[in-house]
Structures are given as C-alpha cells and as structure tokens.
Length: 477
Image (cartoon, rainbow, N blue to C red; front, side, top):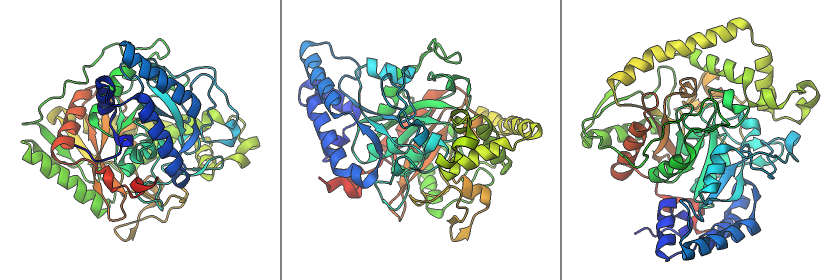
C-alpha cells in the first residue's frame, strides 16, 4: 500500500475510496489546496486558485456519494491549462495582452470532464501562447520543476505537469501543438497523451489546426484512460471530431508484440542518461516477451524546418497577436521571434514543409505496418534551465554544443504533430543525475489508441513507474 499522502492518490484510487466512504471529496480537496499553499510559492505553476468554489463543489460531491447520484469523476480535482476556455473564467494564454480576458465559451473537452463531476480548482501556467518548450512569461514569471527547481518543467502544458508531480492536483489537462503535453510530462515524470487528431474535440479556432491536440496528463496510465473515456467522441463544435468510441479499459496483453525503437530519429544528439533509460525500457519489454528491434529513420533537421514553418505561420502567436507591430514590446522574446519567423516565410517554404510531411510518413507508415508500436525519447536531454530563453542556442549534450536547430527544439515530439493521426503517449523512463525525470514516447499506428495505452500499461506495471516519494518537496507542509 502506498505511503504517499492522499494528495498523490490517482483519480482511480480516489474514486474507489469515495465510493467506499473511506475518504470524502472535501477531505481530498482540502488537502490539495493546503498542498498548493505549501509548495506553489516555490514552483509558480498556477495562475489562479478557486478555493471557495472548489470547496463548495467538493462538499456537494460528498452529498452525491451519500445519496447515490455520484457521476463518473465526482469530486476529482482538475487543474486546467491557461489557454483552455471555461465560461466566466479569465484566460490569459500567458500574455499581458490577455490579462483581463474573460471568456464566454467552454472547451468541449473540459466541459465533458466538468459534466462528469470533475472540479476545476486551479489554472496552470504555460509559456506565452504555448510557443516555448519551457515556461516563463512577462505576465506570470518563471515556472520551476518540482524535482529540481533550477530546471524548467518543459512546455507548454508546464504547470499542468508540475501540479501532478508536486501533489497539487489529481488530474490535469493540456494542449499539444509540438509536444506541449508530452514534453512537460517527460520532464516531470508523469504521463501525457497526444490522442490521434480528431479523437478529442477541439474548440474554435483550433478545430482547423491539425497540429493542435487537447488531452490528459496524469500520474497513471489508468487515469489517462479514464480521462480519455470522457473527453473523446464527436462534438458539433469540432468538424474533425470522430464519432467512434473506444473502450479505454481494454488493455491488451503485449506478449509477442513487435516493437521498433530509435534513439535519435536520425538527427538528434541524445543525452547518455536519456539513452540509457530508453534502453532499460527496451530490455524490460524483451523480458515481457516482445521482440524489440532498433530501426533507422534517417530523418534530418528538415523535419524541424517544416514543423517550424507551419507552426509559425498559423500557430497561436500568429492568431492571437494581430497587431504585432503595435504590441510586440509586450511579448516574450520567443513569441516575438516566432511571429517574425512566420512573417518571413515564402510560398516555397510552405510547399517544402508539406512535402516533408509526406516524406516522413513514407518512413513511419510502413514501419508501423511491420511493428505494433514505435519508441523514442520524448526529449533529447532531461530538461533545460528554468530561466533559459528558447533563443539561447548554447545547449550542450554529452559535453558538446549542439546544432542550433536542436538547441532551439531539444524535444523529439514535433514530428508526431506533423503525423497528427498517430497516437503518442509520453511515459516515464527514469530519473537523471540532476534529479529531473526522463521520458519515452510510445507511438502507435494511426488511430490505434489501445496499442499505445496497452504497451504503456505493461511498462508501468512491470518495468518502470515514477516514485513520487522521491520528489524533494514532498515533506514541505
């Protein structure tokens, strides 16, 4: 039995205890709010905390368990990212331009979680408009990694992963346009799922961006599956949302599966600890009866050029700063740089980017026809300094300065936003000497969510799971 405090209960465990009557939602919510008071000043992972409403809703959830009307997520605390609209909430996108932006709509995915009984008790930080792999903004400052506060938590669902790793929430949500769910999941030792495009509904205008994904972050695979069972499904608000539903409890036996892996995707220098932790999972899968083979993708930095071209020309910053010349002095350095890059693109740049999309699937499509899943690191190094600007290109890996295109994007996630129909889950793979966790991406064939979740569940149960008792802030009260 876990000796962790109740703040670290999984949603699945908490719901079981709520139903048994051995724990009240109001007791867990009070503990989470106390935990926020104790550790968030060190981490700066939240933009808002809704104390009174959260406790009122938690006490109402107590009554629902007593009278038998509890819903699927009744009383579970949910931290929501600061770009996900909830009617009546201030949504800032991490920008001073939207400091007072109260919205009148609710994202269809978070609406489903709320209607299932989840309680939004906090808002989580993100880099401005989600345009960076770590988290500082002119509005909210620097968010820090709970495993080692000198390092960043990754981005852009930065605060979402921090709140889970630091015991400030039970579930979190995120968005992912180049790895923004998976990067912080890796850096903080939790699970983060980029469902295949269309599986989870988006809100407008993100509905029309095939790189953009809404999805879950959690401390267990079972909690990811629980959230997915509620979020997914067709919505009239998203023209791309899929009608078919999946039984996310149907985990398969992975014995006999064929698993491919690549350490570097063909062009990344990879930190030796990240590599070693990936190979430990590889050996674990072999011990479970899988055939695991290393494959060569032979991709190049053209993949980064293509992702950057599409993202900078139509991404969040380009949409949310229509008066760039007027407002640029309010922006973070990385936001200004992203918009400048997008403005300088030519038709040829965009055409070449789309051709690269085709080229990388010419490799990955046949690969996933031959293998059940594909593995690679989530990030090329565990993390970067919490205060580091993404424009600082002086990153070293294994003692050597890396090429600028790797320093700018040290995360190995964005190719799978270009291949957006592939489901990808970042799973914890270990902890580095710095104390910062590492992660591995499990990539499945198009729309085959359960292959990804099944392999992740096998790894969690038999090979490696994060030991949150090692979080340095655990004893802070």
